[in-house]
Length: 91
Image 1 (cartoon, rainbow, N blue to C red):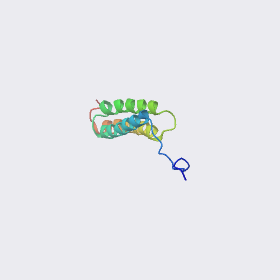
Image 2: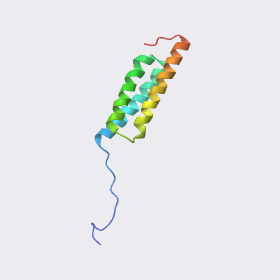
Image 3: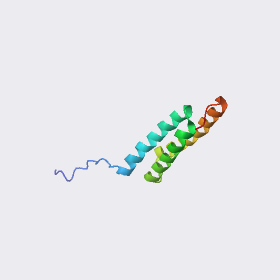
């Protein structure tokens, strides 16, 4: 039996853009969650932009980037609601 005939599955390699977009999506989620409690417009709007850039880098069909965009949008709504109810500054 030779080494060429054995069928050992090789690990699939992810492209660099998918790795970077995963890190950007994770960072956007973290910053959005912090933004709910502290200056929603100053933190959540840039993180929403970063998550949209990450979704564009990843392409179609990647769940983390979609989840990141949805979480940022929900945090924007929640952060603005909390800031208005508690009379905290928005910016």
